[in-house]
Length: 382
Image (tube, rainbow, N blue to C red; front, side, top):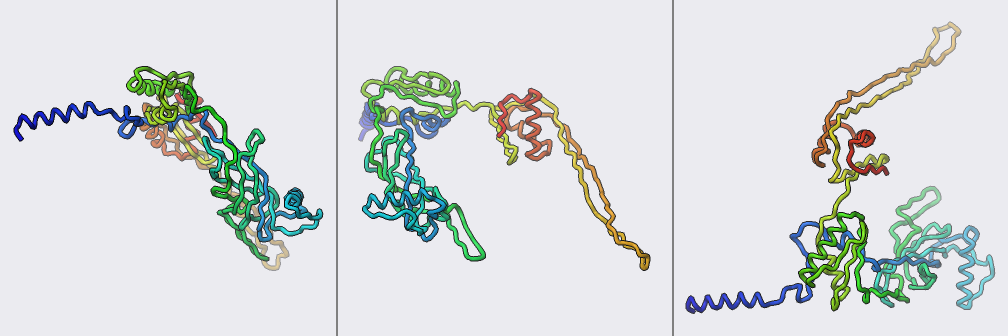
């Protein structure tokens, strides 16, 4: 092949690559690695896409003498008699004394867009005085939503991580034997109605409300929309909400996936969180401290009792007595004074470490700096 033919071949390949549609034109989702920031779907929630709580009351049977006592849990006996009557088996009140039945509360979470016939996990917790639910089976239990309608029905064998065993003189237990789980134990019987597919806009709620973050999310969506649709579609409604209007002919699922993969850099508030009980201190990146001089010292008072025994001399007819002997020691640790300049997080941490104090001392220092007005951040005490 001549040099002219090779050059013509290269030009043809270049023109072919220019004519091929881009991944966005083929319906690809923007975003990906190599871009600074976090994905929008990791810092926001989509309005209309949420879980729903379900709850129900049922009976667990098949326990090995570890269920409710009929005297201590009268509602268990009432529920047992009602269930047996529905199954054409009658029992006289107070006739049952077996402890192989337990009353339980059944809870579950109904995911968004779940369809009828799908299975969801359920949690089962003892309601009476049962000591263990190990080996039990949940009888068919309807699960209701906040509107009182039945959305799922649960039934199956329990899976427990805890156990309890005891003898006449000893007992051993691990975990919580009165709380279990049934993976896929409920079948969805009713679907949640919604118009998400026909919605003309997407409402994004920020998990950490902030005006700067809302503006950055709206700008990222509009930058993508101008390239894809030729116009902006997003507006920052307030510090929590960003509204994106769905263009004509664009599926709401595709638009939600495309927006979720866009990356932004969320604004982090200047905040210091301290927990005095555990001695935990968390300092945000945006925290700043004006130049201050800090000293910190501890005063320790020790009281030691060492009573002495006074023994009388032989044949003196004296009495043996205990003579108190108290020693009081006062020790004050030397307090080093240090200068803190919180230009950034690294310098702030280095300045606190230079004082050589423990976490409890750092908490006291930060509270004092906040009282002095030199801590340019929100102080949260848990």
